[in-house]
Image (cartoon, one colour):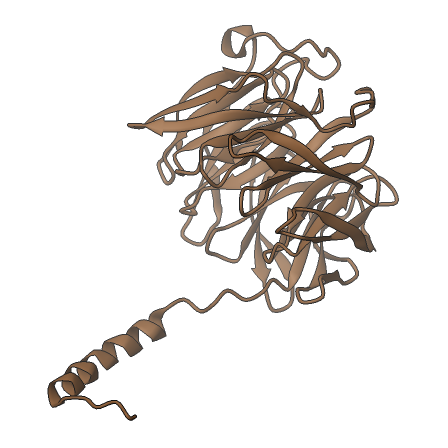
Length: 387
């Protein structure tokens, strides 16, 4: 039966139509599937790129996208076609313009990182500030970003030198000779940066004001276990559980995060540490490296250098971790792992010679990895970024 309309209903619908059309026209277009993968490198000539077949989950051959000095860690602007790299050897942070049609990069801006060995860069959710962890310099630096995404000179620094400022270094003398900031993760509310300090076995919690002249505010330190060496972290979708991967003792441990009336709390949960190694493995020669969270919060993924394995952990309702799967990374020295946006595939950057990027099929329901289903040669890859 053909529906009937009264004259009043017809006029109301007709009056609403132009507004609906304007809303439809002004809506953001659907996000296109990524077409490229950019690779940060250690000893390569710079940043490399591969074509990415999202349907098949396959990479093309690697090609040089832009010359750069040891661009080991990368970050994307939340809105603009800008890619940022931490350049460890030159102590700089770089901003590249991305041509998404061609997969090419163009260096448009660079600033000193105000510390030696920058190894991590993050961009706040508003796209107004950048934060860089300087490993050798033992500091956290903050940068403003212009409306075009260019880096402004650093305006804020949290410097960690000496016992008075940071406490005593950890007990692993050949690795903990002083502060070594290894990451700068922005909190779920975009109001704090959590910076892992591998050298001092601590996490710096720093209030931030994105867009301010000096984005860094007050800071406090949270102690980790002596000799653990906090490196990177992954935050659960519930915004409360923070999982820290410790490089030196090859463990993952849960911290509980909360912010009440602007006051932050990060509490280490005793008894939650779990090894990234098999029960019978020796710690010597192994270092835990990267950690990422599954989209549904049911699984956690990590890689360990030395035994060169990927590990999948299952999360219980209380946040405790249980080893579910261990699988070879398909190369040597896995440095970084990342999901493609569909979560159907996981890519692993294997840094050591011969150097490769391995592609694994991923079952989001079971959390398990299969593969590698493809291995692509790459020059000392250290980071994987989909664009």
